[in-house]
Image (cartoon, rainbow, N blue to C red; front, side):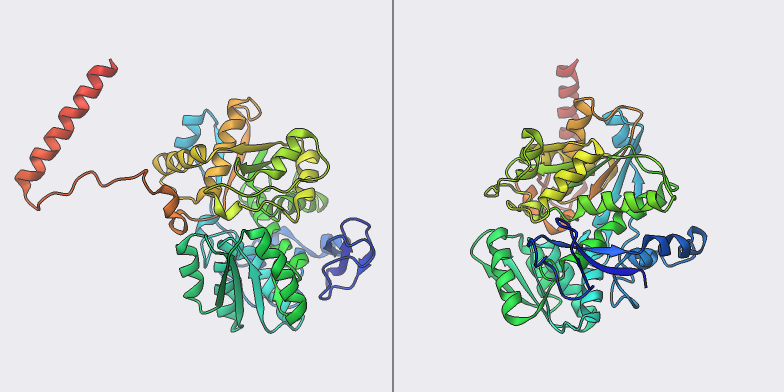
Length: 419
């Protein structure tokens, strides 16, 4: 057993690895503590290379004692070398970590939910729940269905319809609340105490967040056990970024990798409390009211925000906030250069990367990984009005030829004007 217990992230008070999630001494959040000496003696890269390609590939570094209940098809998403996009941006080593292909619900949330549900079952929870901006609700619904566990999903009333439908297909009870995510989350903390349900991102949060480390482990292994010069991650509640940084630190501690990646936080201008704190040198994050089309990262009071600040600053990274227009343009650019469809969170990371390139933070010979954390098919309404059908014609070859000839004449006129 490599799981030692839980430790407060603020005062380092120690607790057993039970249902605790908040320090009784200082009210700080708890984090999983491991026996790294035992892990180093037990975990071998050659042996691990023979394991299945899923999140449980790294099981010694995850907080589950037995076999995972779900997640056997989650994780190990592609790390794609983006050659055409890299040429366009002037970056020779541009990589896209594509969690929009994660199974079963097409977002990085399948990683964290695999761990939370598996540990929750070990701790005796029978009913699971979550507060969600969409992707987490999809993942909890699907993983609970696979585990045969009932669940409840609580969401803001204005999230994308596709995400609501995707959750409902798996049979949870879904409650839409008239308010933003932060209001939903506060209510869920009260509900969890009242009913004793396993809220994956509240009372199971110490275990849930550990699942995000698997994205970092995979990047390192897919790069041949090398770390990139830069990684750009979207930030909402702050789960992902600190845990990817932790994954890199753990692999360094095990002696498996070298390098010190600069970790960059990407947010939308309409919801950028962490970026503001980074830019202004603040130690505390001031909550904001979200106003952005990037709804999956529209969390104005990020629970793990202070740890994002710490991880970014320790790595020498930075924070970037981009406009909704920049986000949509980046989504279009990605689709047209690489044929990849990402939701606005991915557009946020790519647009932020482009800003870092323009500012000279990312150099042409640097290696950079851009995280794409969800699929565009779940957020197509963001692109409404930016796409159109080029023609509606009768099914007749003469009609088509006339139309196509007109398109060619129009293109010729554009070329003449541009010359």
